[in-house]
Length: 149
Image (cartoon, rainbow, N blue to C red):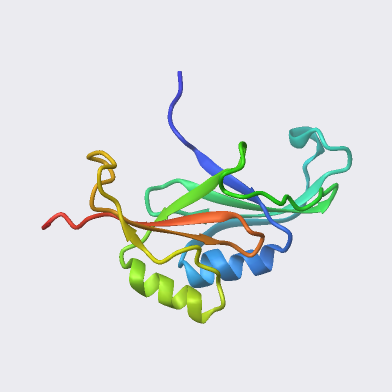
């Protein structure tokens, strides 16, 4: 039986650079960090070693950033619309302030925040924007509508 989403993992080219984005700009906190750990048994990649940072999300789930220190592959050139492409969506309290902070830091926004309509009861009224992390991974920022309307 499926118990729910446990975590999302993203392979990064430079863990410190990615932490500057996810921790310093988006405000996620490091729960655990491991340096140059053997990963061949889990990944099936001969000689694989990884440095990992687990970041806490407010709902109790984790965002796992993984840098291969041995056995790494090539950077993917994917567009959000390419089959197999994924994105991670992170809730924010103030999407405008978050976007301003990201833009001041030189982060690319794919658009300005838009308000969703005709998207169903879960999403209507939410404000969203797509941005990219340092490796080009699409990160959707979501500001849910306030409970008071």
